[in-house]
Image (cartoon, rainbow, N blue to C red; front, side):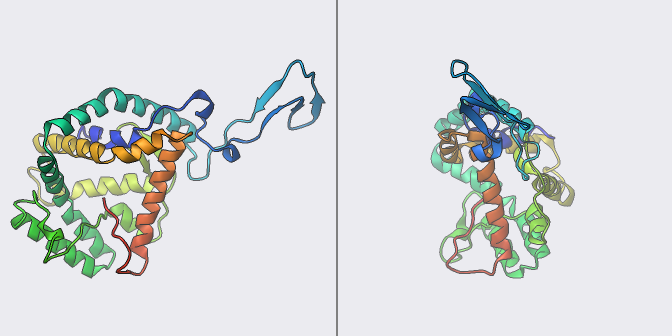
Length: 280
């Protein structure tokens, strides 16, 4: 894993720490029964107990089918939250204060424009030639009229070409490959087996297809850091919502899985002009 992923992934793990009682990361229905009464219940029999010694019995948490690595994921999630609070958030806040909004928007547009060739290839792989053509048009317009992608001219009149995220993981989902187990990995953050493999393939496109500077650390490291800080600033609102949840890990996991499934469903559904275009 290259260093450029460190700050790009850390914001996705930025919900607040869970109290000990919530460490299971599961809802009551997932965690099994909890008994708090004058009768102690086991799997074999029920034995009366004195009211003077109230016993609480909690069954071990049972991971959900989509999250078989739940216990390990929760530990990683908690560690990544500490890193975010202690390192990433202060740096991202300094980044936001140091750079005016137009400069940050320009950098966001520039880095996003570099993803358009990857998006184009995946629309072709999905036989969505119209969307591929629009993506090619976006890249051409923003790379020229948009001054190397610093300005998103393609989105505005008269072109009206919105950004549409796509990647190899989406292509696999489009063809019916399931997400696989959910994982919360160090540096990477929340992902699934499908998204992890798809992201790896996406990151090979520019280094192998074009070469320098996309295969040089002098470019990839600062670009990765800038992209991570930009994402952390833009994602802060959702992270605040996750922090307020009774079970932040569950909130972060469910948000990620629901968002990714919505993106796959959008690709597989028939286009409807009234539907909003998902943003990356």
